[in-house]
Amino acid sequence: MFHVHAASYGRFPVGAVIVGLILSLGSCRPSAPTPNRSIQPGETVYFVPTAEKMVALTLDDGPNGAATERVLDILKQFRVPATFFLIGTNVTHYPEIVRRMAREGHLIGNHSFQHLRFDQITSRAMLEDIARGEEAITGVTGVKPTWFRPPFGINGVGLDEICRARGVVIAGWSGHAGDWNPQSAVEIAEHMITQATPGDILLLHDGWETRHEVDRHNTVDAVYLILERLTREGFQFVTLPELVRHAGPPLAEFSDGVRLLGLHVQAQPIHPGDAVYIRYFWDIPGGWNYKSAAAFVHFQTGDGFRFQDDHIIRPRGDVRDLAVERTLIIPPNAPVGRYQGRIGLFDPANPDVKLRVPVRSAGLHRKGAVILPDILEIRARSNTNNQVP
Ligand SMILES: [Zn+2]
Image (tube, rainbow, N blue to C red; front, side):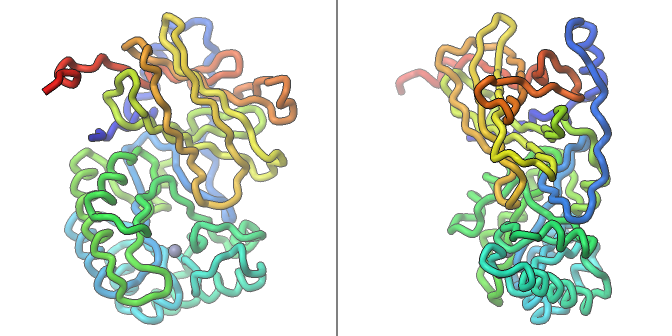
């Protein structure tokens, strides 16, 4: 059984922690992280660094008749706004549901008219399908959508430019439950609940592409379970633009423009030998011309015991899986105690030299590594776990 643990910087008063550590670690060079720059049309937002315990719930492929209406009932019951990415052809089928969404304070985004794969059509066809989806929504609500999520999360060639020209921001996601695969409501909900961390954009589906009256009762029931648990745990649900309004600085920024937006360590308490699920939220600048970059990630104790979770980060492209998801096996001989994280990048222009990219800003950094104190804690296994029944 996993427990929700948002081991991000958002859980504690960052200022106080940083000041305390500057005093105790005199050799570290502090530099104030730069404020989050505003989001521009054509950019992809998939995770928002924030000090608030906030997430955005997004629902794709609707409206879908009764399933969407039930989701709206549940959202109303919890007084929670969501962001719906609607398919134009479904909008023309259920205009009354779309009007209800708008009336009840939800944000409506465009998810294209026909839900085609954008890697299989021309940019002209892509533009036309986006425009038609936009018109379908505007025709019903009178409001032009300013958020777009590409079907299947596939960024076609030229999507950035199309969205920039139309004044539209591209929505990705940082957490999903794979609810397009057959799963029970409890499985979908557990998956979502265990990975929720402040700043997450959560993805579910109240519809199924361009079909009508598709059975989505598992996802609908999962929405109830997710809202029930996460609101009880103090999470606030907001629409995407509201989440962006609460954006804070990234965890770190490197001199080549790469940013570490956040980090989420799941499944605590953690014991030696455990598999731990970690998500890294990296952001690569637009003009990036390397195939990948290598991140070094060290977890170490004050005594110098260390294990690593080095990984590759890729340039921005598809909105699918922008978050780097990793499963880390804690060494069985890892001593119990608190671990510091040290994260940095190797310069992709010098892959053989392993030259570290300097840190431009971070709470604490040293020798090209961002220092994250107490990023995880390893505890001894309790005796009861080891007893033979
Ligand atoms: Zn979709």
